[in-house]
Length: 279
Image 1 (cartoon, rainbow, N blue to C red):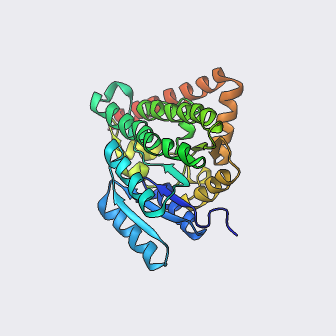
Image 2 (image 1 turned 60 degrees about the horizontal axis):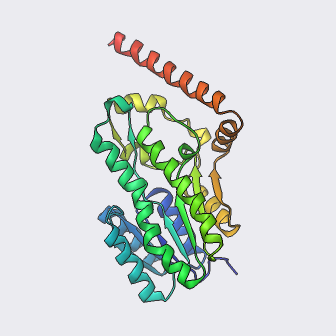
Image 3 (image 1 turned 30 degrees about the vertical axis):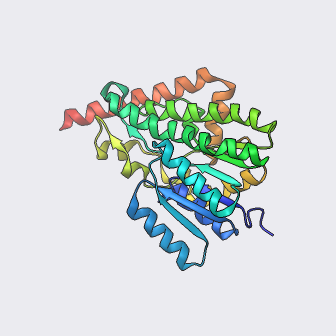
């Protein structure tokens, strides 16, 4: 029997990518899934796919920046099922480009969705799980929440925050019967590069610095790894071999990691300058 059978699970950012794959993986394993996404068309399509397969599913159009809307979704789920076993705070965005080109609005959008979206989910569901005496909160961060990366400063800041929040909450939750895990994926083949806002950077330039396909995995492969980690109650679920290598280097020698990232960034700047001269 599946570990997830008959568990009630909420997944935010389930309209595409990792969130959709997590929701599918949970439903396929027998969970009762509540899905949400900011994009109305995407979440409606996912809901249709679930219902076509006979999977139990309730869908919400949700902006995770809206704390009351998140709480309303959690409360509606509790009213329908009488419990919540799993909360996947997965919704996220990215803004690509140098910090010098980012406007304050860019910083706020990324932090409001990636960090405060998680905070809103935790604030809505954690007290409920404490009252139940059980539950598992799973927050999606990134390998960029474990290692510094150039060109995505706001994203890195938000994901470092999610890692710290998750590790601290795990300590408190352990005394209350509530489990907490944080997911730190490396390169997952989602639409995030196509969906992300770019500042001071063109799509062609982004394509030249995006990771090669061979180091990435599909959202479905990622979801399978995450669900195994959740079943084992792992504190930090690092996804992809390359992400594990980077995280290990940074843990052993942050100085080496900083040198690697600085060198890579300088090289990218030189290539960009040469390309601009040719034009």
